[in-house]
Length: 525
Ligand SMILES: Nc1ncnc2c1ncn2[C@@H]1O[C@H](COP(=O)(O)OP(=O)(O)OP(=O)(O)O)[C@@H](O)[C@H]1O
Image 1: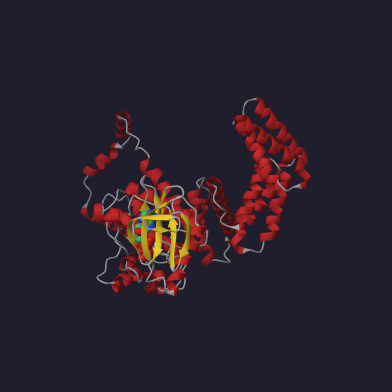
Image 2: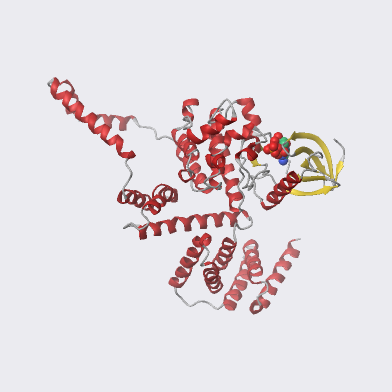
């Protein structure tokens, strides 16, 4: 095949063979850029179901643009042959690495898991569930960056366990209980289970369940507790182990809420485990020693009648056993609420995530009409708004397409607010509320919009007229130019152009901004 042309690509070496086709290294002849080309096997090109699957994979890849997802470049059909070009990733797969080295240090596992969770967050927000996350589908670029690939069965919600896994027995190793049973329906948390399996394998060198055959393995996913990772790799820290076991929960409800919650938990662990331990000074050690009550030493040597000691010990034992059973009692509404409240009072949004998963959602399920129901709802709203806003910020920061129309509208209004145009921001937030108020899935954004409206109104002051405000901004940009701060001035002109293009009221100002920008551009050339 090497040297053969397919469309504008010249084929090079074969990189590998997958369930649907062959992947080649290739060169885009127009620019000389290296790419990877996946070609649907000619003998499979006839099968309609495979053609559809190939097309679906292309359609999904087109939607996803993320630094940790293999980038789609373009594709086509030549005669009966279908192909598509994608980013070439040359650092090998995690599967290959594990085969060669056995396992990975836990710090690296956390780093990789964070990148996978980021890729999943993006894909889930676009409505795509991967469903086949495994080490073979995690490729590494030369600089070590991780790239998720192979969306061949993503979103194939009709596939049963067997059709989904039929291509390789290995896939059974990463299959969640709901994927095997078909209920509850597969959702974003299915990928989180697979992430748990992958993390388990990276840290211990073994998959969580190892049966003699596929059936045995599936039953283990359904019924057996996974071994503790530290029993296979004693270096695995307790908090990392807890995170992996939470991802591996049989019931999706017991896993993390979503891939964002996983990222937050990983970042928290990274911070916790890399904090230097404070050394104990000799003075502090001495003081601590001096503070130990002398009485204790004496008591040890005092003669206590044997029966007294036995009773004492027995009663302690009974108390310990009694206390040990407490975590297994179902918690009352008051107990759950007290724990939720304590976490919600924390300044740390990660604690809110914990409150949400562990106490607030269970409270809503078990005590929908309970005496704390209103306050619980308020807390749930607070967490959901925080998460929606965080996600929107990430979208804006990375320049990705918004994850939903609600997010797009919110970011638009936010841009006006940041620019200082409170009138337009208010208008945008208000229209968001009107447009989205009945859409349950956009509740968090509607609440956020309402909160912003209240804040803008509460800030008071005369809302500056829009035209006047933009005029002032133009004047400010001119001042900035005189002070040599061209970058700041450009930001203002750019904002005016993007925010008000097409607004008749501000036609003159937009033209002026464009003109200033082009003058600056030509003078700096
Ligand atoms: N973008 C890429 N850059 C470099 N190598 C790649 C790229 N995509 C795939 N490969 C290599 O080509 C091989 C085949 O990939 P492909 O995605 O077709 O199948 P697979 O994941 O092995 O199998 P299946 O589709 O059955 O799950 C893989 O082993 C992988 O190492």
